[in-house]
Image (tube, rainbow, N blue to C red; front, side):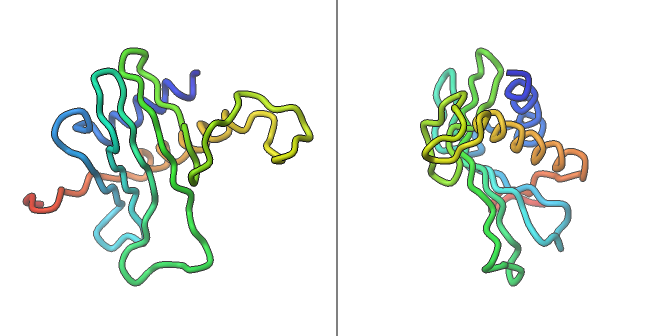
Length: 139
């Protein structure tokens, strides 16, 4: 739960206007960055928000051999937590698994997804990622 709480506050720092009018946000280190973090609000209700988080390569810098995962995040505003609910389309993950198991999930696979999200968001905050202006806004 601590990872989910910390991830909620990290997301609020990186994407403070997700609850208002902005439906998407690109985050990058600089205009000549090799990649950007792309946040897209898929669903916004009174108590929850569903966000798709992906990393996209800048034009001309795509790597066909390496594709980063796409995470779906559910933010629960009343509890102030953000949890990964899907990774590359795989959903319905149990909190714990016996090992070995048929799908070869790690015993704490769900916790690992949330830790991965935390590492990604912490990296963005530590490296000075900044919100890019939305399409049509002045820089």
